[in-house]
Length: 171
Image 1 (tube, rainbow, N blue to C red):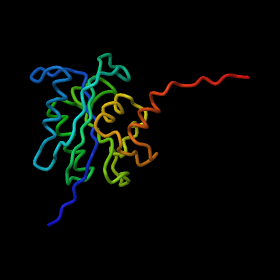
Image 2 (image 1 turned 180 degrees about the vertical axis):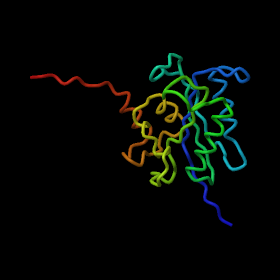
Image 3 (image 1 turned 120 degrees about the horizontal axis):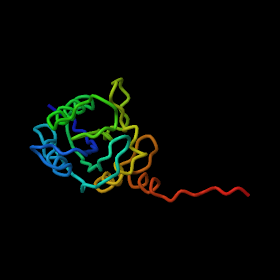
Image 4 (image 1 turned 60 degrees about the vertical axis):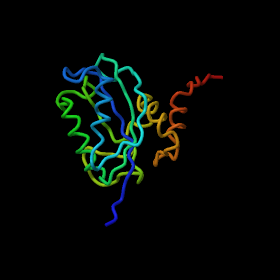
């Protein structure tokens, strides 16, 4: 029997320590290890980078990215990622962008755009192009992966994001 294998770019983030695991950097190391399962292979992982928080959280984030291969379709992989988040103490109550022990996001999928109806899943990730803390680790391991919406590579998206902004002058 032939089974398709899909590649996914996964974003990882943490900014809250977990007593039995440790600091956010250690949580990300263990989360990447937790991704390795019978039907999920981790092909590449980025270095861990620090970033400022979004929203009301005051804790600095640790962020990373991983490329995984799996026969799981996007909703099934999303469920698996949410199970890992729960294992690491993630709760989905309260306001968005609050401190969290672990956040796992599907950023890109080898099949392009996930267009089927699913309330909590959009691929590419809607914020992919607007967050340097996502683009920087992603560019470390998947610089030539193209965003199916813009056609730009991760490296190009990161370069555009970090390009100095020109100030228009009135003449």
